[in-house]
Each structure stands twice: as C-alpha cells, then as structure tokens.
Image (cartoon, rainbow, N blue to C red; front, side, top):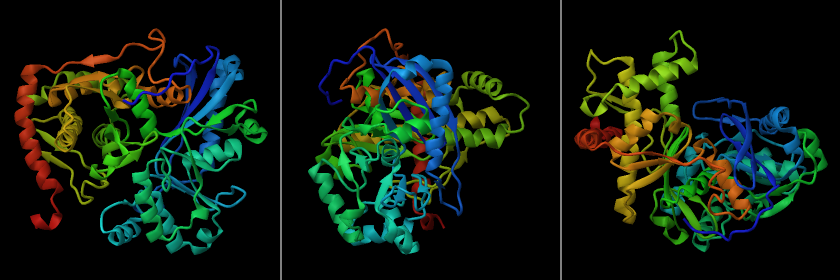
Length: 495
C-alpha cells in the first residue's frame, strides 16, 4: 500500500465520518488515534419504479444524517461539541442532477440502477471497446438526456452523492478524486474520460471540479449546522467512495495491496498504478495516480439475505437467535465432504462477468437440510472469490498467502474459517471490520497511513486454513469451476 506523509494530529481532535450506503447511514465519531468513540445508524430504502431501477430522494440522505447525529448526541453530547472535522464516505456511482441553486431536479440514480444499458452499449460501440456499464454516471447522464430533455437542459451540475452532501454542508460543488466520473489526476485515466465525454456530448460546464480526498473543501454553514444539530465552522473534506475508504482501512493490517470486502456486495480490490488500468477488468479511482483493480460480486451479503428470506422467513425465532443457531449449524457442517454446490449469482452482474448468468444448486440430495443449502450459498461466495484471486494472479502475477478481509460478513466466524479452508489462504479480519471505511477516511484526512495507537484498536483476527479440509475443497473447487464455466457461457450456447 502506498505510504502517505504522516502529520502530527492534535490528540483532542474529534472527527465525524458518515458512511452513506444503499440501505442507510452509519455515523462514526473517532478521535485522532482512530479509536471509534461512538456510532449510530439510520436506515432507509430505495425504490424501484421499473425493473432494474434503483433511486431515492437525495434529501433522505440529509435527514438520515440528522437522525444519526441525534442518536450520537444522546450518548456523546460533550464529544460532539468538540468535533472539528467531518468527512463523507459514500456509495459509488450515484447521480444527482441539480440546478444552480442546488435544487434537486431528479431523484438520485443509485449504483444499483441499470436503466442506462442501451446508453452504455451505444457509447461502448462508439469507443470500440467496453469502457462503461449501465451503472456509470456518464451512461446515466445520457439516459437522462434521452428521456428527460427538459431536466437535462435545466441541470447546472451533475453531482454524485458525496458531492451533493458536501454541497449541502459547505455550499461548494466539487467531486473528490475517488468518486469523480469525468475527471482524474491520472493522465491515463483522464485521456480515456475525455474520449468518452466527447462521444457522449456532455459539456464541461455541467461537470463539477475535482478535489483531492484529503483536501479541505469548506466549513459547515449555519444552514447545514442547524439542519444537523452541529456547530457551524466544522472543517469538511473531499471525502472518498466506500471502495477507496475500505481499501485504506484494510491496509492497516499491513499485509498487501489486496483486500476482500464482504458487505452487501463484495469485491477483491488491489491497488495498482493508473497506467495499468486498461489491463484490469474494472477499476475504481484511488488516490493520486493509483487506481483500485476491482473484481466484484453484486451479491455477498445480499446472497446471504436472499437465502435467509427464502428458507428461514417463517422460523419462529428472533434475528439474533436465528443467526446464533445458523452459526452453530455451519460449524457442524463439513462442506469439503459434501457434494452440494451453489453458484449464488442471483443478481444481474456487471462486466466483466456476463449479465445473463444463472444461479445454480448442484448435487442436491433429499437428505440436505435448509442449513445445508445455507452453507452451500456461503461456500459458493468463497469459491467465487477464489476465482477472482486466481484471475488476479494470472493477470498481474500477484499471488496471495494471506489477505485482509472486512465488512459485515466477517462477523460470522464459521464463514471466515470456510473462506480460509476453501481458498487455502490465511484470512486476517482487519481490526474493527465494520468500521474499515470510517477508519480509512479519517486516517486519510489526518495524513495517517497506519493506525498510530495499537491500544486504540483491537488486534485483527486470523483464520488459518485446515490442511485436510483444503485438500478436499481443492477437488470440490474443480467441480465448481466446471459448472461456473457453463453458467457464464452465453445462453444461446446451451440451447
């Protein structure tokens, strides 16, 4: 992981970090040792007017931040009065059209939104190669122009979610380097973006400026302070996407430039030089001239939630009781000895994986229980991640013996041991895995490349692969890959 200059931070500094995701906001209050003093969360949900659409009123984010701050006040009012800095860590590729006064003209189209497929295909055809997906903001801007010409014409700037929150907080319309859809500090990336923008016909005037993620953008205005119940004058920084913040937070383990994320979605992320971006399946902007080679899955936690809803919705037990029972059930199942396989590609995937993929259960027997099916889905996620790790080694020469993991999925010890056994890797769950994004974003604005106070953050948890299980999983994995190859082949080849 690239090292950044270490600045001396005042030990009485308190920082608010807001993780703004698809299903809610998590507010974290940290001190300058990167210890999480308190946290709170507010949930919300997007709506889908048509299949493949995912949108929401951007002011829901504003209200959720206010609610999370109210919760923190109940617990940590004194520390909140001493907050000096604020940073947003937000979901990637959300588009918000605003007029010159910052008034929202159309609901936020979230990263999950796939309505712009035709526009992405058209732009890629004009480029002669696959550059954009339907999730990309440029595709969504062209969709808005194609379908709502009046809104497009009235748009002053096309913001993304972090930029919208910074504008509300400070009155400044800029996008940070990790979230900008049209500008980059990397010459190689900017050259590609310039070509796409020219073909798309999007004028420069509608695109906000770019700032560095650790750059001081402005201070909290009186209006924003009143809305959120904070003191005005708090410093607001450029901020990061969740992908970039998690990469920074995961680097605290000091293992390698690669990490696995087990959240609602999931990915294998690896920091590479920007000049190598064209050789990567997908990339997310990172710091300066670097990018994150991203090999992701639409569903990790979502796959788990799907199988829970499918099989256990009618169980007469609370969520905590159910999870404890399932964890005990997982520990009692040896998947390496079972013929049951699952390829849980239950959501439409983004490139480079084909979008017309199938979910599969294979080798099912009458003796298999609901717990066995649940185990198979989680095991399938592990095998999919193993495929991504192998692809990383083939394309870059980077092999892994130990890799850091973060996200909500790390709360299952049985799942993490399964990951170790099925990949043969040492799995190191980073310190405070639910706060990797908050820790990464705060460390960055403070100029800290590693956690400075080993007593502030618990040591990471390590899962070692069990050799006898790994050997059996290796044989099972060969079967998995054969089925996976059939699944991702174009549909017409199997007709």
